[in-house]
Image (cartoon, rainbow, N blue to C red):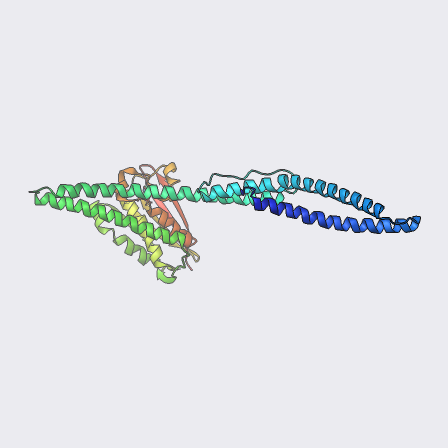
Length: 355
Ligand code: ADP
């Protein structure tokens, strides 16, 4: 709030003076007219004394009236304008200094509607700002946490590799650990960038018509070495000629993430089933596994960024995969659902519009 300066006091005083002179002028003119009429009616004669007396009384009356009016106006302004303006200005100053917890209190009394509307808008803004701030700090904390582990692993193995006379087998093992760590970091950065692009920019899907069954097979085949190594049985039931008009690059991201999870969370000797069905309007893809499954509590959070329900596989991911999947499905105005039972398996169902 501005402090009363000499200039401000001068401005207030000159305001009062102008007001006083204009009221004085108007009232004096009226008075003179009134006296003129009265004197004519009563046959009175003007003398210098009674004119001076009338002017003095008029002047004094005007002075008292303006002072009274200005005092009432001053008190009204203090209560009705300056107080609410002060509380709004103080809130704005706190927001500027980064304090988003501030809220403007509701003001009571008539004539406060306008100020209350401004206050409500400020409160809505600070609520929005504080939730964005929480998201931002959570995001930074998550990224830093996710970066720390692979970096620590890489540092340790880097130190170990410096040992003289290191056997060749160990050297290869350590080099592999460093490569894995750096791949994990690179994967995480790629996912963050993709998610950022999908969340913060207006995405215009690049629509082409393609065979969804073929794309699913192409994605599944990328995991051939994994299912062979873990001896996982594969079952597919794909409706033929399911053409969709969609962004193939974005959809591939969905299948890759879902297959990656299915194989990651399924133990040796398990089974992964891929089903594609379609009607005229929708294509439905189900990717089911006989893996560890998840509880309903975990299932409720899996589409959140950096959420990892199963910590035993934490090093093999970063909790961004399903957040990306959900974002893509939303962009395509599709639906995704999860069904899971601990120790039995998980099924993820994605439904997208065909055309
Ligand atoms: P990440 O796989 O990197 O941990 P995701 O976002 O892909 O991250 O998945 C989030 C969490 O959802 C996983 O940590 C896991 O707890 C759970 N999840 C996802 N898919 C499956 C699945 N097929 N079986 C069991 N749990 C799963």
